[in-house]
Image 1: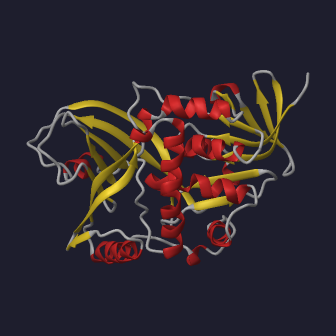
Image 2: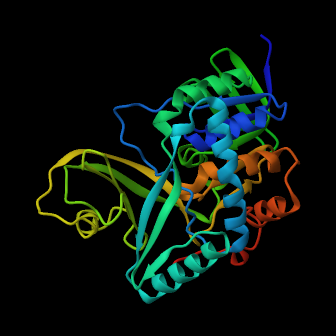
Image 3: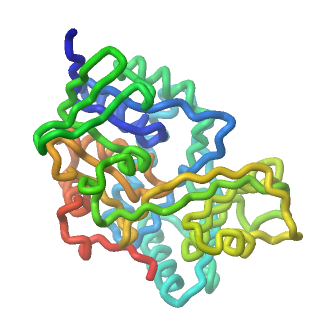
Length: 340
């Protein structure tokens, strides 16, 4: 049986993975995407938001250059309404958090944003946000037109022999890929423990939908020190994303206006990855052809075009330097974004 051959195999079911696969294919690369469509019955596990929890200018620069690229791609796909402005409130609880938020706001000013700092909270207006459900069909068509082959994750087995052998087996037999890009936490969590970067830690992630509550201070509210993110939907219900299992109920309740008790409409649990220093981790994993992209948070999709250029050797010097600095073997002290 013939072996299917690709330049890149991109693992991930997120918009970040999909856009990355498409951008690679647009550079005349043979691309396999191992990912599935989002289930309408599953609560979202992320907010696709162009707001990096970052204080370093190089990170903001790469992110801000990616925003118009994603907007242009969506327009070309016929899904311009998938990019919408969102008002965001970030609330911190400690002196360290206030210092971080202040530095983050100061950096944003240099890139044309005008956040309003009010002691323990920062208001951000008209932050670009991707409504992925509005673009899913268009993205699928775009990938197909670009020649990207898509396979469901359950149909592919990734295995490791020697450090020089990463083996992919699909529904029709063996698959050869020059690089295997793990662009989703679930794929990295499936790696053998000795291949997982030490700078990443696994945290439980609870996604929950609560009944209609009084209006939040902003449609999107982030509480980074409590590990809670909220998105109020048009019907008034609130999607909550809570990282970590300790004091889950108390942390979630502390971010909601009440009145209590609030009915819980749906809840799901999984695990996600966080970097121990708050900075992304993007680069080769020490096993031939294996590459990971993690820790980009809500802003991940806006880094996809630049990462595609980096992987194909066409990145700008500034982009290449940024990705190199965030590689697993680079000194993490040079990129840390820890809140405290």
